[in-house]
Length: 167
Image 1: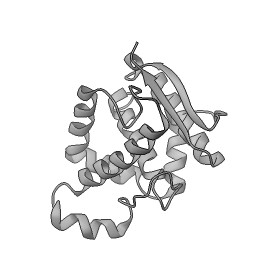
Image 2: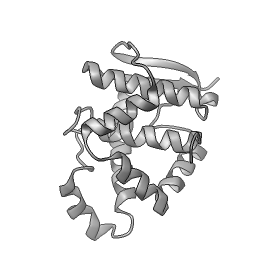
Image 3: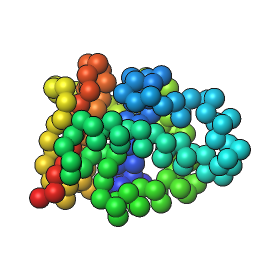
């Protein structure tokens, strides 16, 4: 679906999650998206291994973000419950498996895709970056800003954490 904010948010979450893993930029100590993990996950989750990968990475990323942000902040890996449910539903279907396979190819392709979503490179500082109210999270502008901040941070070798707050 072109220009669907939920789909765009899922894409950014998948890309940031993959790029943050130990074998890419090392923001969290997981390797769910490495080929060897499939051999571990497939027997336990034969039909939903792609969902297990997603949730494993999302939980690791959530912990790292939570440690870097203040309590009550929202970020790409901690969103309001109804939005988390919508993202899970979007990923759990066959379309979600295809989306994940399309974006999780290698580090360079994933970073290029994140850059393309985020637009021109942004200069960001290390640490938290406020994007305003959580009410705007389903807008393309916020999703574009998030993608740009993460892409810039990965390129510069820093850790930036875009976040939103309750208005």
